[in-house]
Image 1: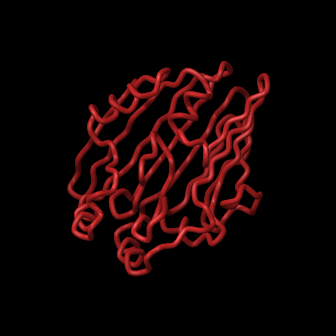
Image 2: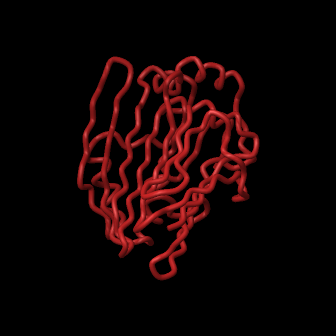
Image 3: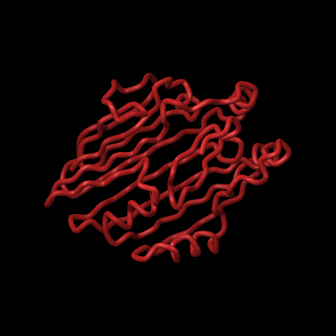
Length: 219
């Protein structure tokens, strides 16, 4: 599901399409309890200007990000074992900031939230231990240079971040788009061991990674 106009695709919450011409900031936090239940917190900033540019650029047919509470209620209704426990939206001059918290009953439900196709996200639990893998960017993505130059102008100070906490201590391993371990990319900030592990970087830094990007969380 790749086009040159889509500069980022991540299968989060029923295949939400994060295209940088409509959304340029994203934070994801996953908290998992000992029994496999937990909370998924997602906060994202939608640029009004870039969204309008995307519509004018012929991208009106792309799936839209859920913004209103009703959108999110419909999302969780389609997945048994999930509940929208919190929602907020704050419209500013340049952005709309949306924050949602979704409770999930078990690992299978979390997998359905993140990636119903199970192509880019996998969860494997054995007793009290487990492994949770996400491929954020494959190594075969292809971007339109003129669009990337435009997005770069408007993406200053916008970040992508992901964090995970499981029962006990967790570890984070950085991988390429094929799931192979690689060094922490330049400019990224990480906490790779502890109660809560995390990765954060500027949005545009993601697209300087020729080999893609993924994460392995273990607990």
